[in-house]
Image 1 (tube, rainbow, N blue to C red):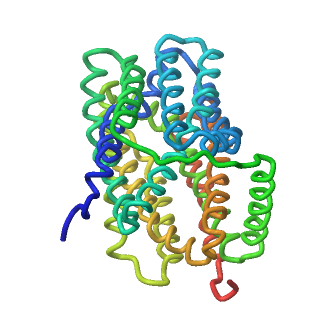
Image 2 (tube, rainbow, N blue to C red; image 1 turned 180 degrees about the horizontal axis):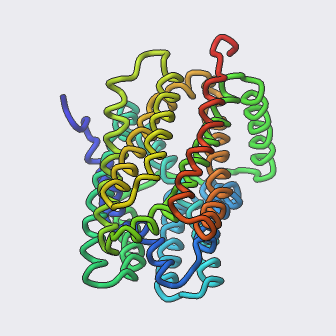
Image 3 (tube, rainbow, N blue to C red; image 1 turned 90 degrees about the vertical axis):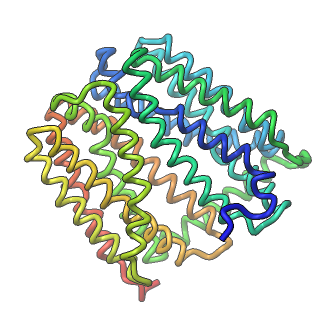
Length: 400
C-alpha cells in the first residue's frame, strides 16, 4: 500500500513540512505556566490570560472569516501567522500583566485569520487536483503534527536548559516566521475574488445557525452528547497545566524537564485513540465513552496518594490515556446523527460550546489552585466528571 497517492507530495509537501516544523518549534505551552510563575503571577491571573485567548478568538471568528472570503485563504493565513509572530515577540519583552493581557487578546484575534482559512484553502486545492487525497491528507496532517509535538518537547528541554525559559517566545516566533516563508514561497492559491454582499452572507449564516441550534436542541442524542461533552471538557480543563505544573514542581520536577513531559504527553495522546479502536465495537460507542470516563475518574482519585513524582506522573499519563481513548468513538457517534447539510454548522456549535467551557473553567482552576492547592483542584475535577457521565448515560438512541 502506497503511503502517498499520485501527485500528493508534489502538491502537498509544503503543508506537510510546515505542519512538522511549526509544531516542532511550538513548545511554548509546555513551559508557559512555569514562565508565568517565575514572573510572580498568581494562578488566577494565569487563568485569566489563558482564557482571554480563546474568548478573543470566539468574538472575532465571523468578522475575520469575511476577510478570507474577500482576499483569499492564503492571504488570510499569512496575515494571521504574521500577527501571531508579532504577539509572540511582544511576550518576549513584556512582563507586565496588563500588557500580556493585551497580547493574548491580540493572539486570539490573529488566530482567527488562520484557523478555518487554512483547512478551507487546502481542501479547495485538493478538490481541484484529486478529491481522493482528502481523507489521507487529514490523517497524515495529524501524524506530522503529532511527530512534531513529540520532537518539540525534547528540543524545548534542551533550549530551556541552556538558554533560559524566555526562549519559548523566540521559538514560537520562529515557528510562525518559518511557516510564512514556506507557505508564501512554495504554495499557490487559484483564488477569484467573489462578489459577495456581507450583510446577505451574514443573514444566511444566521439562519443556518438557528436551524442547527434548533435541530441539536430537539434531537435527544445530540442535545445530551453536546452538553455531556461540554461538562467533560470542563472537568478535564479544571486539572489543566495551571494545576498540574505547580504540583509537579513541588514534587521535584526541574524546569527544563517539562519539555520531556510535553513529548511524553503528546505520545500518549497520539497512541490512545489508536489503541482504543481495537476495543471499540460498532454501535457501542456510548458505552465505550462512559467506561473511559469512569476509568479516568478512578485514576484521578489516586492523586491523593501522589506524595512523590512517579505516582503523580502515573496518574497524569493514565488519565490522558483513558480520556483521549474516547475521541474516535465520540466523533463517530456524534456524526452518525447529523444530516450532511448541517454537519459543519452543528460541528461548529459543538466546538463553540467546548471553547466556552475552556473560557469559563481556566480562571476557576486558577482561583482553586490559589485557595485550596493544586492537588485538591485536580481531585475536584473528578466530582465535575460525575454529571458528564450521568448525561452520557441518559442518551437513548431509540429516541433519535
